[in-house]
Image (cartoon, rainbow, N blue to C red; front, side, top):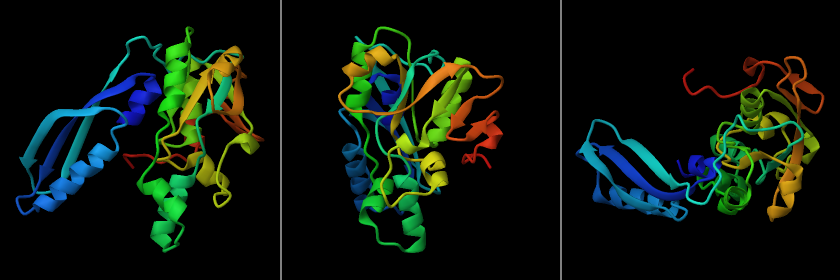
Length: 236
C-alpha cells in the first residue's frame, strides 16, 4: 500500500488497518502484527481501522498520501525520448522465496523477500522537482509488467538493455530478474534533462516512438501482447 503511494509520487501520510481474527487468537499475535505494521510505515501514521472476529485471519490496509507541492505520476505520461530509470535491484525477493521453498540459507535474499525496502527518496526527488508529465510504477508484479503497462498506456515502445538492470550476483536467472515480483522498486520514465535532479538511479532504457504493435523490447526479445510475458496472475 505504501509502495503504491510512492509510485504515484505522493507522500505517505496515513493508513487504516482492518483486521479480522478468530476468537482463539492470542494477544501476542495482535501485538506482533502491529509491531510489523509500525515497522513498515515509512513516515505514515496509523489513524484507525477496525478489528472484528472471523473464521480466518483477514487483513485489509488502506494507505492515504499527500499530493501537496508534488507532481503526481501516471503510467500514461511517458513520452518519446524519455529515459527509463529504476530505483534498485530486481529479482532478489523472488529468489528469496525460492530459497525458503527449497531450504537454501541465503540470508540476504530471504530478507529481501520477507522485509522489502522501499525507496522514499527516489519518489520524493522526482515528485517534488519535476514540472512536466512523467510515468512511474512499482515492480510489485515484476519489472517486465511495469515496463509493459507504461508502454501500453503511453502508446510508446520501451527499449531496455537487460545488461543494465541491477541485480545481485546470486540472481542471474533472466526470468527471475524480469518477472519476479514483490521487489517494490520504482521504475520511472522522465526527461533525460531531469536526471541531474535524482541522486541515485539506474538508467535501464529509453522510450521510443511506437514501433508497429511492439510494446516492449528487452535485449533481443520483443513483446507485442501482455500474454507473451511470463507474469504472475493473481486470479489464476
